[in-house]
Amino acid sequence: MSSYLAAGSTGTGLSFSLPQELVVIALCALTAFISHQALAVFNDGVRPFLLDFIRGDSTRSATAAVSFGLSAGFVFGLGAPMALSTGVLNPWLLFLPTDILGILAPRKWLAPFLGAAWGAVVVFGLGGANTLAHRLPIDFLTALQQMSTPILFLFALFPVLAITKQFGRVRGGAAGVVELVLVVATMKLWPKMFAGSIAMAAGVLMLIGFAAFHDIGQRRAGKTGRTAAAGPAGGDDPMTSLFGASAARLRRHLPLFMVLGAGVCLLARMHIFGGGEATSFLIAKHEYGAAAQVDFYRVLGFVPLIATTALASGAYGIAGFTLVYPIGYLMPNPWTALVCGALVLAAEVLLLSRLGRLLGAFPSVRDSSEHLRGAIGDTLGLAILFGSLMAADTMGGGLGILVVGGLYLLNEAMGRPVVRMAAAPAAVVVGGIALNVLYWLHLFAPAKG
Image 1 (cartoon, rainbow, N blue to C red):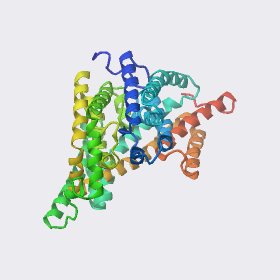
Image 2 (cartoon, rainbow, N blue to C red):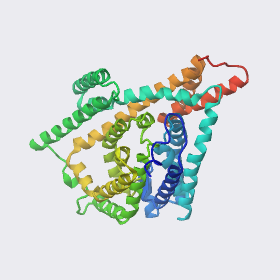
Image 3 (cartoon, rainbow, N blue to C red):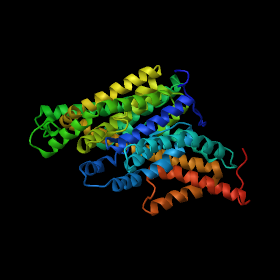
Image 4 (spheres, one colour):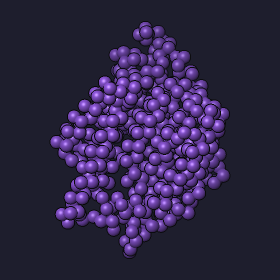
């Protein structure tokens, strides 16, 4: 089994072995079934709307419309271009569509069927699209690989941004100097290592250290106004009652969540899947340790958001706190991935209420996670935009930059019908198609070489 589930998709190829195809299809069917029952969705923005649906205050079609509106831009603007350019699947491409299809399905049996159909489209359709795109005179998929360098290097700065926003310019500047020194040292002393690995670790540790010392100092001074009672600890508070009911609802479906955790962890173990933008490029380069490190830091930024929305709505995240991603990358074989994934998601569901109380007891640490999440979005937003313009230059020089940059600016002027994070890669794809049309009309010739 191990030999079949080894990396089958690296570089820019999108070919999968039969076991890999079956696992992707089965996991898409499972995630669609779970979203149909409003037990979990991948899109954090959709989760709060599920409370009205669970209570019967909103219809299935209305909730599906919300899910589609919040997810479509990420699917076609970010998920598909990232998968085609890296040869690695990602959660936007797999799980956002199954969110929509599962909620939309009017019957319980239809949801897994629709999810499986989407999984089949991904594993059988993307390969053909990839091959066709690479045969075009202007290969915009290869050009999209230009995003890898800005994404990987700028992503290393997100702890610096988070420290600056939460603790000021002095500490942020000091963290920036520390990270720069560590990046240079890593490139010099360990050239085969991902240059941002040690720097990111140091930055995140500094942020957590600053936050913990601040909370401890506040508690010692008697100034902490928020205690563990702020979480779901019981009592007459209506929100506390809601949190308790939501946690109990999730615990009742613990076996299903264990199967889900096992499946997601196995998918990550296959090394044909990356949990984020930077991770996808690292997986494509077979740097699984660095990919695990990057996704672990992403976990720190999203735990409070996922925990809070899960306790408020009664719906969890499809990948939980996404801790199953880095664990899966590092598993020695598929069997341990299955077991560890099931145990990790089970532990997350069982400890959800306690985690809510813990976050209430350490407000600065909780706020650090929010700053981390914002900093990740800021760094990746700039990196993706810069990398997309580099791809545009590779495709068509100044004309490519004009077309891609113009599409991005037009999206901004129109009120962002495509979300900002996905707008630039989508512009590269549309711009690449436009340049090919101009080539066929003999109005444009790509630069040789």
